[in-house]
Amino acid sequence: MDDLEDELRASGSVFAEDEARLLSESATSEAELDSMVRRRTSGEPIQQIVGWAEFCGLRIKVEPGVFLPRQRTEFLVERAIALGDRGDTLLDICCGSGAIGVAVATGLGRADLHATDIDPAAVRCAAENVSEAGGRMYQGDLYEPLPRLLHGRFNLILANAPYVPTGQLHLMPREARLHEQTVTLDGGEDGLDIQRRLITEAPGWLAEDGRLLVETSDRQAGTTMDLMKEAGLVTTLATSAELDATVVIGRR
Ligand SMILES: C[S@@+](CC[C@H](N)C(=O)[O-])C[C@H]1O[C@@H](n2cnc3c(N)ncnc32)[C@H](O)[C@@H]1O
Image 1 (cartoon, rainbow, N blue to C red):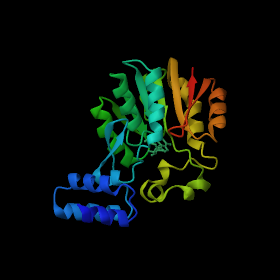
Image 2: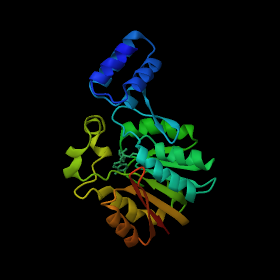
Image 3: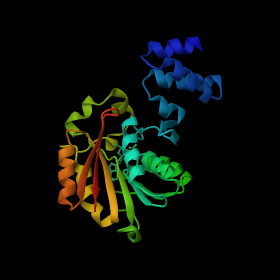
């Protein structure tokens, strides 16, 4: 165990002790442990190696290439649970692993959860997480794959869509650049291409008292709010200094 910790530490791991324990617990043979350690020391995120990420106290299944849920996004979940009710109809749009929808559904106790993503790897991974939470997964562009009967039905639409401007992708941490696909991060020239489309179409999918929650950056929050106002939503800004998180909330 000490050798393993030293090897991980030497490769740059800040949490060598925790990672050594995690890898040892996950591997079912010496050969598998060797291969996992090789993957970790060459820079692959620990969550992709062990196959799960911790999010809001839950174990969310993740796969190589799929966006790893970030701790800052727990703030969006917290706001959604505070605004939602047991039994709500939820949409996790651009869901990645499905972490947000699963965490909100779990927090509300019971929910009718729907989730969409365009990326086949994310859809494969989220399908397991979402179905374990009793929800349904759809593949396609934003709202396009949803059944029309859900139009006007969502109490909460939850979105952490890509919002990194294309020109700033090279500034992302190495683990993200190398191990998460560009489609999970790239928000176009100003970072808001996906948000813009997602917000414009949201009012039609929201129930009468429904709310749209969008994670954004503090720098982009003003534009995210303007987009919601243009779509006819009443907006509120929520921030967490502790999690460095910004969420814009729009109400019909
Ligand atoms: C930043 S990741 C966030 C994933 C998840 N919401 C989370 O917080 O863990 C953005 C996700 O949006 C998906 N995506 C990008 N463009 C999309 C589109 N046009 N329609 C649906 N999903 C899209 C990507 O595949 C990726 O899984």
